[in-house]
Amino acid sequence: MNNIITIFRKELKEILRDKRTLIIMLVLPLVVYPLLFTGVSSFMQGQAEKAGEETLRIGLGAGGDAALFREYLSAWPGKTDVRSISSDTAEAKVQIQADSLDVVFFFPDGFTASVDSLDPVSYTYYYTSTNKEFQVDMIRGISQGFQQSLTARKLAQLSVNERVLEPAQAEAHNIASNREQFGSIIGGIIPYFFIIFCLIGCMYPAMDIAAGEKERGTLETLLVSPASRLDIYLGKFMAVGLSGFISAMAAIAGILISSKMISAEAGAEASGIMEMMEGIIQPGSVLLLLGILLPLNAFFAAITLMLSIYARTYKEAQGMISPMMIVTVFPSVAGMLPGVTLNYVTALVPILNVSLGAKEIISGTAETGPLVVTYISLIAFALLALMASVRFFNQEKNIMRG
Image 1 (cartoon, one colour):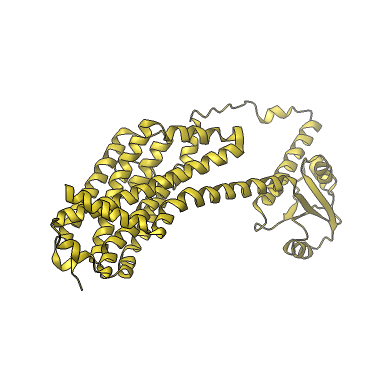
Image 2: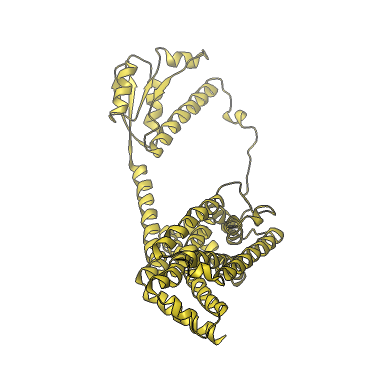
């Protein structure tokens, strides 16, 4: 046991000397991500405020009867700039594509009379879906609102109460808590980042203390020491595992810091985020998340160390381990897709079960059965990876592969 601790401390010192590893493990998730997330949030908030002040440029084709539409626009709460243009649709399309107008409406002659007499009538408008999303929403909202105003006008002429169209009012009550609602939306992001950073936190130390030692010629010295092969491996494994764990915890802390900063800016509107954060840091939730993270961490540490031991050089180890990132990203992202939930089948799929299990824990909606299967499968995969890695390390041909 003393040999394992000695090797563990030695390898940990080597890892902590590498500034690049420290930056990736700590600085990136704790500093860069909060700044990035709050920056994006502030930008989106600014864009939303800007959208509320945006003036919609509306063209009306000449020669048509647009009296009712002009009357509707005069009462519309948004800012509009209404211009008359020629009745040529080709000219209208040119002006829209040239960004001179946002939308052009064409109304036929006698439109008002046709509406009042219930004769079939239609109007046309042109816009481009490549406009800003809020502009497209405004255009569609204007058209829908205008249609509703025409309906109200006709009902008034017929002395019919508008409530006849909605004889009953529906009252919907969402019984999901704020934590459940926000957890279902952003709960998949947190496990995605701690999965990725757990892998990154294992990758670089594993490459340095295995393939890197081969290049430096220090691995042979370690192998002829009194420590057994198993002691050497376990010391390295513990160092790599601790590095991955710290990196994953830093990623979670970075996201929580980001959420705190965003919720502070949003004020009362962010009560759901705050409730979700408080739920995450509850002792029960922390223990459940650790139960998922620790076997995942052991799995990554064993696999990355095994591949790095097999590699001849640091660069070769990098080439062998880097594809793991691609393999890991896909199931991590799949866990964020709507409709993909934790059940007895997905609980057996590596990485995906971590993403879904953590998402359920964060949302506070985890079911005991699938969660237990997730823990069992993760522990089984971690043990298999560890056993395979130890056996691999004990074979001389793999260590001295030259």
